[in-house]
Length: 160
Image (cartoon, rainbow, N blue to C red; front, top):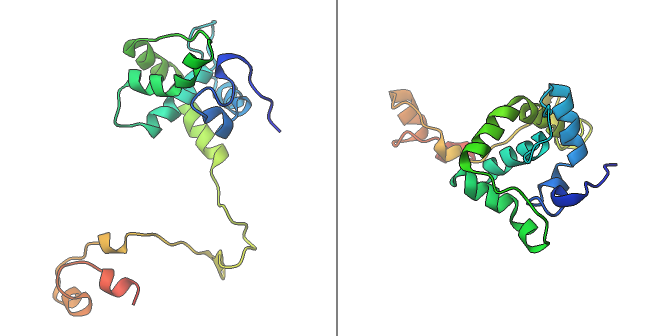
């Protein structure tokens, strides 16, 4: 079980990300990868990890807008939060680096089903599926056109 962070970066305040990715896990990953800040900062490494995650959620906007979305709930509760410049956020991103996010991914990802779950395995092979069969392009060879038809797409035969 994870403890709850207090202060401005508590669950429900930092863009809901602290509910999904607990701060203790982020702290442990930062410690493990050696990316914890060496001095007290307005933007600690923990916040940097959440900022990097938020950047993935909002790839179409710039650093400042991502920060504003991440810290939006803080304005209404009267907590003082840094208003970093785009350069400060860029420096934060560089300071944290990719190692904590990579390790966080390794910790949080995994198969949703257990090996004994029905339909997960066929013999020793793990079954997989993907959507988008119509996006598979085929070469316009004579054999492919005979089998799949003209157009170079495999969708007609994928599910038939």
